[in-house]
Length: 121
Image 1: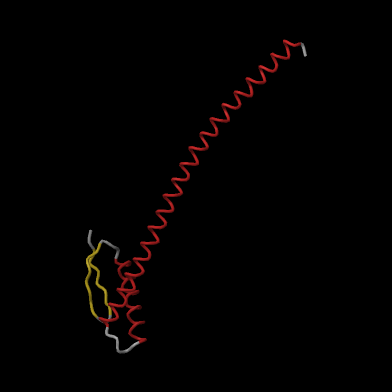
Image 2: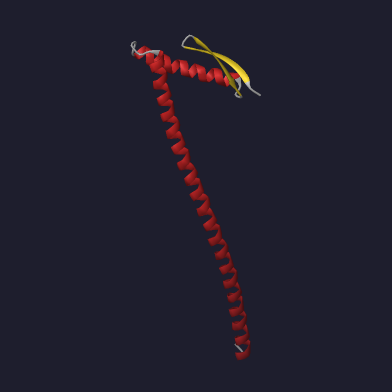
């Protein structure tokens, strides 16, 4: 369901249609207004349009860096999953080897007992 949300940015009304809750959109508009005001207050010759372009570029930069970080995290997570899979395979092989060695030890102990009984020790 689409919500119609009216926000005011730099004194201009904007009506947006979004699936997001109005409170979320109001929060975004408030952040945008704050960033625009920060740029305009530091340089009075900057127009609202230029400030909007600067905010847009900064936001795209943040988004691009966040996506790159997310990609790195996903790659690390995949590597950890792969390593865990390899470790599980190695553990299973080691457990099988342990069982084989236990069986060999038991067989050797039985052979040793039988040999002692034969020799009378």
